[in-house]
Each structure stands twice: as C-alpha cells, then as structure tokens.
Length: 65
Image (cartoon, rainbow, N blue to C red; front, side, top):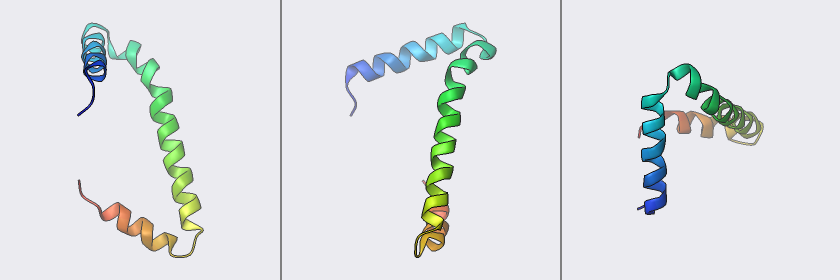
C-alpha cells in the first residue's frame, strides 16, 4: 500500500484534470509519456540484440495482466 502522500497527489491530479481542458494538462504529461515510450523501445532494441532476446520479447508481449 502506498503512503497517504501518494494518494493525496493522485486526488489533486484528478481534480486538476477535471477542472482544466485536456489541451492544458496534456502538455504537462506528454513529455513524460513520450519519454517512457522511447525508453521502452530502446530496451526492446537492446534486448533483441542479445542471445535469446527475440524469444524473450515474444514471451513478454504475450503476458496478460
């Protein structure tokens, strides 16, 4: 369980999103989301170059949460 501070931050962000148009808050989260996608793609590229990497990627993509 996360601490109370985390929960409070999630609530503040949800309120912010409700009160502001998407065009405003998307500018704040877009760089974070883009960077996460870039990091993931770089990871897959490096993994693919390792022995058995392609098979590991196939297994990872089949994981259902």
